Image (cartoon, rainbow, N blue to C red):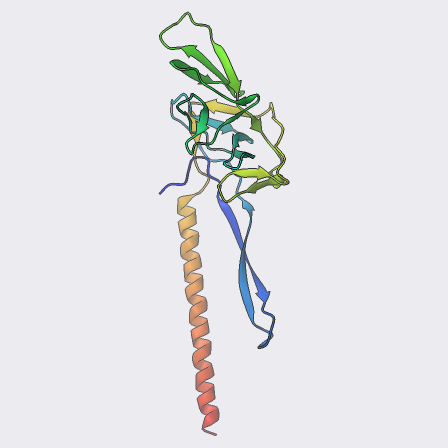
Length: 219
């Protein structure tokens, strides 16, 4: 299954920590940690769909998370709910500079480079273009961005980020995941081989210890 649009690969690290208590002081256990995410951009691919939008360069789209807080994503595969409210595919409201963005019925939608959402009445070439909102685009320092369990990013401390007028988007396009499937598979194979080698070394050490014990018993 391919990674979601705009997905950011996670970085994992493992640390050996001493095990306290009775027994050998050389005992250790391993703890995993998630120090962050890989924020390198993916590839922008043209789709031609009016409600698709890709952040062009650094920056994020603001959305309203399920808990009501403001969160950020690069997944610009948007849709309208039954009330015309602009949302993500998972049903989160897209945040505009003035709140939620509502699309009038029977209109064609255009998303400009600066995130401006404009509509024009379908089939009426004489209709004036109407601006219905502007996507809230932000660009906090990468070091301040924290990935949550829901896949969304937030600013450390939880405060909403300020809009950044320098962030631009490409309408009718989506950004692919930045996960390199081939590289990830190669790394997985290498790690699996290293694990097998370590297990073999442990098995050899156990065998040698057993043989040494047998020799000592014969004396």
